[in-house]
Image 1 (cartoon, rainbow, N blue to C red):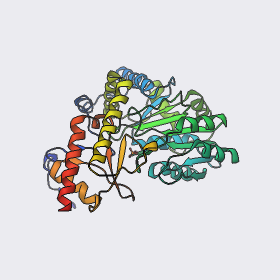
Image 2 (tube, rainbow, N blue to C red):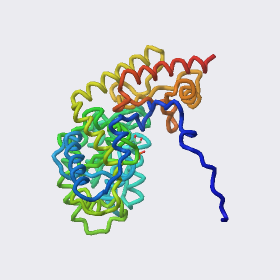
Image 3 (cartoon, protein in one colour):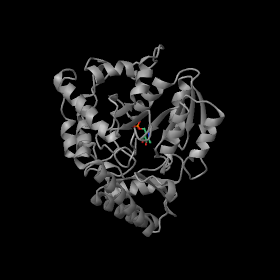
Image 4 (cartoon, helix red, strand yellow):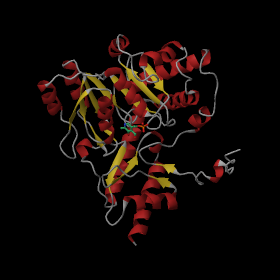
Length: 378
Ligand SMILES: Cc1ncc(COP(=O)(O)O)c(C=O)c1O
C-alpha cells in the first residue's frame, strides 16, 4: 500500500472531558431527547418518515406563527437555508436591497451578487438598527424585487426592532421580504404571517436547540407559487426548492434526507411546543435581562444600546486590560465554559438561546467570566 493506516485514536481521547458548556453564539447545548433522537437512523422514505416530516411541519407552523404549508428542512447549516431563499428569488437582473447590519446580513448580499442580482446595501447609523423611515426612503427612490433583513445580527448583538414596520412598507411596494430569524426564532416573537414575512429561516443549532447542520425554512404560499412557476433552471440542485418539495411535500426522493437531523429537529420543536411560545419567550427575556444586569453590576459594558439590543446573543465590550481571545481560552481551560469572540469588533458574545437560558448555565458563565478576568488582570 502506498499510504499507511493512520494511528487509531478513539474519540474519547480527543473530545474535551469534562464536556464544555456552550454559551456562545451557537451551537447551543442540547437536550437528552434530541441526543437520543439524533442517534437513530432508518429509511428516509416511507410512512414513518412521512409522519415525522408532517409533524415537523405542523410544529413549525406554530413556532413560525404561520398558516403556510410550505415548510422544508434542509440538510445544511442556516446559511444553506439562506441560500435556498436567495436562489429561489434572485437571478440576473433582479434587484435586491440588503439591510446590512454586519456579517450575517452581509452574507445575503454576497449570495445575491453571486446569483447575478443587482444589489444595493443600506447601512444604519453606527450602533443602531434600521429605521423604517430610512428603508421607506430607499424603496421610494428605487424599485426592488427583494429586501433582506437579519432580525438579530449576531455579529454585533443588534436587533432590527422596526422589522414589522419595515416588512409592511416593503409589502406595500410589492417587494418580497426575506428574513433571517436564525438567532431569534423561538427565543423572542417573530410571527411570520402577522409581520408579513415571505420567507423566513433558522438553523437547528440555535433556539431550537437541536443539532448543527440542519435548518428550517418557511415560504409563504403566494411566494412559493411564484417560485414554482419560474421558467429558469435554478442553478443549485440541492437547494432548488422545487426539487426539495418532492420530499418535503410528497415524500419522494430528492436526495437522501438527513434522517438524524430531521429527528433532532422533531425533538427540538416538540420541546418548544410543550413549553409553549409564551412561556419560552418569558424565560428567554427573564434570563437575558437578568444576565445583562449582572454583567453591568460587574462593571462591564454592554455593546449595543438598550433600544436595539439583541437579547438572544448579548454582546459585551471586551473588559479593560484583557484580550478577548485569552479570556475565552481561560474560561474554557478553568471553567469548561465557552463563549464567543467576534468578527473584527472588540467584543465577546454570550448566547441566550434555548437551552442556554437556564439559571444554572447563566450563573456558570457569570462566575467563569469574573474569575477569568481576575486571573488575566493579575
Ligand atoms: C444571524 C445568523 N444568520 C446566519 C447564520 C449562519 O448560520 P450557519 O453557521 O448555521 O450557516 C448565523 C450563524 O451564527 C447567524 O447568527
